[in-house]
Amino acid sequence: MRMVDLIEKKRDGKELTTEEINFIIEGYTKGEIPDYQVSAFSMAVFFKDMTQRERADLTMAMVNSGDTIDLSAIEGVKVDKHSTGGVGDTTTLVLAPLVAALDVPVAKMSGRGLGHTGGTVDKLEAVAGFHVEITNEEFVKLVNEHKIAVIGQSGNLTPADKKLYALRDVTATVDSIPMIASSIMSKKIAAGADAIVLDVKTGAGAFMKTLDGSKDLARAMVGIGNNVGRRTMAVISDMSQPLGAAIGNALEVQEAIDTLKGHGPKDLEDLCLALGSQMVFLAGKASSLEDAENKLREVIANGKALDKFRDFLANQGGDASVVDHPERLPQAAYKIEVPAPRSGVVSEIVADEIGVAAMWLGAGRATKESEIDLAVGLMLNKKVGEAVQEGESLVTIHANSEDVANVKAKILAAISIADSAEAPTLIYGTII
Ligand code: URA
Ligand code: CA
Image (cartoon, rainbow, N blue to C red; front, side, top):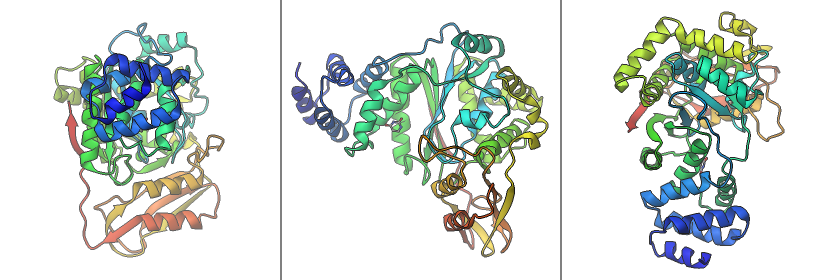
């Protein structure tokens, strides 16, 4: 087989065989096929797309390029949730204990990563003593006994994806549905998921800015999952403005606790119920999505979800008393209000700009070497569609420095106030 022939075949819009796709991915991972040929191939895929079968084959070729996590020692259907990313997305912190309270096994491998705030692991480390450095044996034991554990990332997962994603980044071929979908799905499958729930964000703060693009991506990922024997569902949700009120590490832990108590922000709660219903249903713990949602509401109301969160924190060395004493979470030295420049209705809160403001405060990492300040962040006091009086606080800045003039200016530039505005739709649809 020659790579040049396969580039030509895709360039001409033909369907590649499983063997041909394996040849490309194996050859590229081993360094036998050079970047310039894979660049040309990626551009051909960008223009000519891939069939469902090719997408599934590409995904599995990337899964098989490195280590895979074996979760077979854990009883039950392991459902993983993935979000395509956004600002202030506290869903994982809420969903993990929430579905575990219904005996859905949550065996989560989580990383730190770059971004506006830390990753799930950083957020959880805002709880004193909590750690994810546990052995595989402890991890399996915790999930079997308590239905929930988080372990730090390990192993050489999907090296083909790492190499291909980096190449796509510099060859203008990131924005290709078959390649984005196979990239994301390969990582979830390699991490051992039996079933996958996807939260595909749409809007200014999302990877996919348009609703049509987000729907196409969701359909592509659901298609791949179901094709390779991993039941997959997706929710398309708004990321034009940040989700919930909190953007920051300790602040989001507190927001998650509030939500598990049943008095979190409405948008965060609604999205967690939608995603959680799919997780519970796919795990076989409910007869329908509606039944699943009722069960989730029940464990919030009777305190079982909150108990599960306490349990989870304590099992991994964390101070579970923060659940009842949130003031024991890291606190910033200064709380600085950002007053509304005029009266009216909030009409826009540009999610990624707000995210940048949080990062400037120190809530997230700009580079792998940056240190995170777990205490700092932003609390949105008004969301799109809410009325505000001139001088009333739009946002509370939680900072460890009094000098936040640049952060304030960034926030004010990201928020618009008009004479009237509607709250955006939160959930644009589900794909099953
Ligand atoms: N996120 C991924 O993990 N892969 C892509 O290709 C795009 C976004
Ligand atoms: Ca939030």
